[in-house]
Image (cartoon, rainbow, N blue to C red; front, side, top):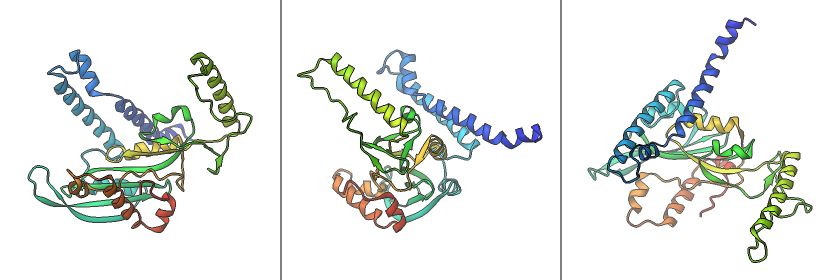
Length: 297
């Protein structure tokens, strides 16, 4: 194969990997923490202003990186956002118009609520608009098994690891009796040093058993959907396996700004849960089968 042609063919891939690394590094930057270091104190009169300016600069750099890979960013129009997610494989499974109250003018305006599903990865995406033309907020939900448990937090956002471990078909597996349940500290009987020794021994046996049998853990999680959605999902896909059928439904809410307007000042978790469950039952049956039952009903 011609070397020049080889380099040209693989240039987009190497460029995407370079940009992905820059995105990861940029995400680690905390503008407010930097501002506090500059002023020397958290409550200094200039800390907030410096932090705000640094955040603007960070957002600008992130937006430039997102544009280079045609990924989503905080200033996407609705049409641009839906184009990007649909080209990435998301399918619209729910859409409804609603009215929301403008926080400044207090006037009602018409907005839109969307739910999309990615059938390859079994990812449910929920978002709603601002002023009909841009994406206001939302999240995407999933079950995912990391290839490397110890580096899972490099790719996840909110969520938690499910209890237990699973085989290659994601069927639950019990810890064998020769290892037994995880050792728990009885502070009335054991000294801390004695507990640490027993605990370290248990984990050493557990990790060996887990790795020898190639068993896996499962993360039930969600991400903010507005910025870098393709980058975040690709990072998860490259470093683990998305479960086609969820072990736990991690959905917190399928609500929109109009719902929050109605419960503001009279918030009821039960109301939000009922609305979410109602909308979940309006999704196509194959989506409902993939995500399972809502755990907050």
